[in-house]
Length: 137
Ligand SMILES: *[C@@H]1O[C@H](CO)[C@@H](O)[C@H](O)[C@H]1NC(C)=O
Image (cartoon, rainbow, N blue to C red; front, side, top):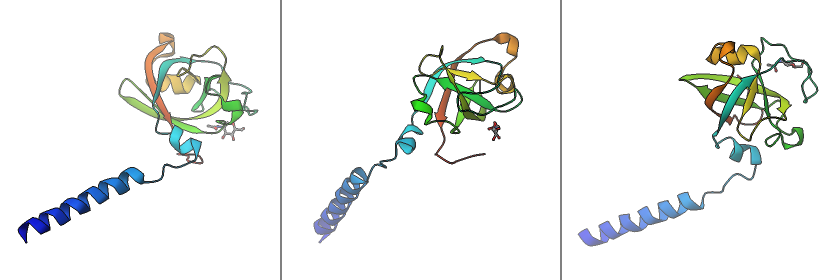
């Protein structure tokens, strides 16, 4: 009896693991993308008319992403969480950065200032990930 009970729990445990492994992966690209943490350099730029077609000001928490992450404008309006130096901030994608490497971010002045003085110019080792589509702070 004792052995049977153990084997029952073992079978249940294995079944549980298989179910967890077989859980459907969301097909939505954005929900996959948001789990990926990107990293690169952070710089700042003078906001204006962004490639997403909207005007934004330097005091808004907005960001330009690399042309390699631009996705044909598909990431316009998407929020991300940015981490650097133990600080964190949400920002919205409003522009495309042609000079940026894959994980680099070009930030509005106020966004950059949230992390460091503008005179620092470049933040190395900025990490960020997209929030779920439609999420906003
Ligand atoms: C940026 O500009 C757009 C269009 O004017 C506006 O809707 C948005 O609230 C602005 N700020 C942010 C943080 O998106």
